[in-house]
Each structure stands twice: as C-alpha cells, then as structure tokens.
Image (cartoon, rainbow, N blue to C red; front, side, top):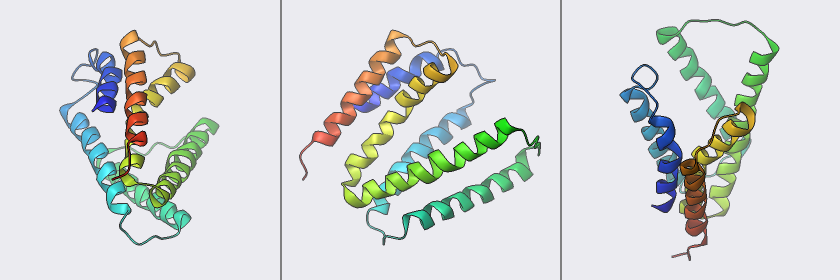
Length: 164
C-alpha cells in the first residue's frame, strides 16, 4: 500500500493538468488493466513450466508485432519515414523494454518469490518520472519527489519482508 501511495503521489500532479482531449477514461482503464494483467501474469508465470528465456522474449516480440499490425490496420495510418530517429526508437523499444526487461523479469521470477519481484512494478512510474526529468527537462514538483521516495520505500519494505 505504501508503494501504491507513492505511485499516486507521482501521478497526481501530472493528471491534474489533463483534459479529455489528452486522456480518456478508456486510456486510464487500459493502463490500470495492464498493471493488473502484468502482475497476474507474473504470478502465474511462477507456476508454469520454464522455457528458454530468449525464446519467450522472441515470442513476446512476435505477439506484439501481430497486435501492432492489427491495430494499425483498424485504427491507424501507416507512415514510415525510415529516419535514423525512428530506427533508433524502434531498436530501443524492442531491445530494452521488451527483450532485456522481460528476460530479467522472467529470470527474477525463476530465482525469487513472485510477490517480491512483482513489487518492482511499482517503481515504473517513479523511474519514468526521473527519465522524463533527465532526458526531456520535465519539471518535478515536491509531491512527485516525495512519491518517488515513498514508492521506493514501499518496494524496499516488500522485498525485506520475511518469507512465509
């Protein structure tokens, strides 16, 4: 609960300046569902048969490609400019969050307790906030800094808790 409170403090100042043209109810619901599904999937993964981590990451990327193609066909427009920036962003999106992060998550699930590993998901908003500040010059307000500390503290407490 401490980690969730920290995440809330990180997000509230940003959400206070959002209107219906930039954030819809559907996007909030999808974001919340994604966290629930990620947590549930991580907990279920602990009891599934282990498969090769790189094969699993490759299958995930293939699944993501299929979903992206279908969504583009139904809801988007195809615009490919082939610029270096686009290729860099695409390589980063495939390699870092998909391949490396997913493989690391699966490795941690195999070698640790699922509840301790999934508590790390609470660090995503604070770390995204720090990246936005560092890379894009976002302004941080004291509430967000306190939220980051609170989320980190919640994760540390969850990871330090004695095993059942």
